[in-house]
Length: 128
Image (cartoon, rainbow, N blue to C red):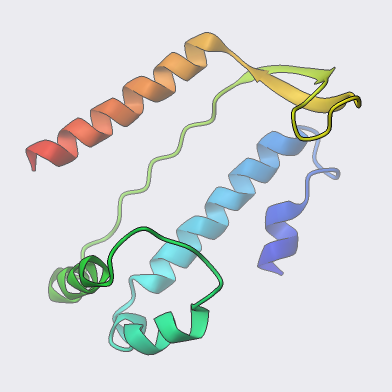
């Protein structure tokens, strides 16, 4: 059900934008579930179960440290999202040359705002 919810776009007036919002809701729910004490207490068996389903460059000891930190304080995660707006159009893409596809050309001001927000977030993390 979550996969269908996260992938649907044709039934929404704002299509891909709504799909992005729905995908973010699924990610929030997964993070909330993953941060629960019942799941974290058995995180190694969970990691074994999902092995091969995702890739990460985060070392195992860093994952273990995050799990211990979460178990010690059970803090809520603050997830912020931002959608880069743009102009809808049909254009050629690198993935399917020779065929016009529906794409969104990002608005430069929205890109700059996204960069600022990432910088701000990373800066606040560096100061903590």
